[in-house]
Amino acid sequence: MTELLIERHGPVAVLTLNRPQAMNALSQSLIRSLTAAVVALGRDETARVLVLTGAGERAFSAGLDLKELGATSGLLGMVEGDGERPNPIHAIAQCPKPVIAAVNGVAITGGFELALACDILIAADTARFADTHQRVGVVPGWGLSQKLSRIIGPSRAKEMAFSGRFITATEASAWGLVSRAVPAAGLMADVMALAQEIAEVDAGFLTDYKRLVDEGYDLAFGEAMALEAERSRRHNGALAPEDLAARRAGVQAKGRAR
Image 1: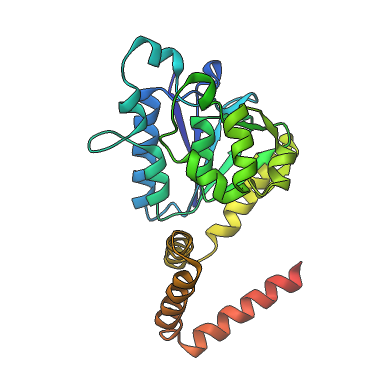
Image 2: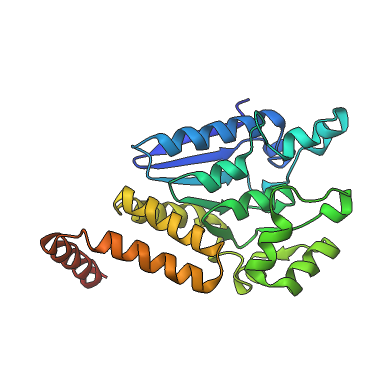
């Protein structure tokens, strides 16, 4: 069975982790396939938006395949991804295209980290999230200990990190962990509608805007504001008035249609 399914819907590429019998756990082969696919689609000019989801209804991903780990000593090879080692988290972070996580079920530990690597998270109302590193005695290596506190605050992040408690999609939405929780039956329809809408935007603009948000997030606020000002001057100064007028008319027409 193919562990990673890739479907194209015009400018939207859907990547599905396809190990439902193992709750879409990340085997070494799946990690390699996913990393390679994200890198390749990032270079593909016909792909404008990527969607990442899991097969079945139970799981987005249960994280690293602990059964496989128990039979090997490959933990560092699976997690760190330095040099020759593939790392899907780095691949998603470096992808110039927007990546949307359609969280269809549980996202646990490494699967949680995989979801957090995406630019936008939309969850089924049946989805749940948990950091279970403390239960298996493994220190996070894909950013969970640092990213989560910056998204939901240190108190809530520590609650999850120290207890291993699962939070619901409703809690995740209230905490700002996901953009929104939607009925499970309509998850992919909602995500695909958003992806198609994003795909209408100029690809170069999306790449630059994603880079601006990500680079600014890593800076102190004052430095981030200076970065925005510099990029704004450089980009906006090159805009032709007639192009700006045409785009403004398009936005107004779209607003009236709604």
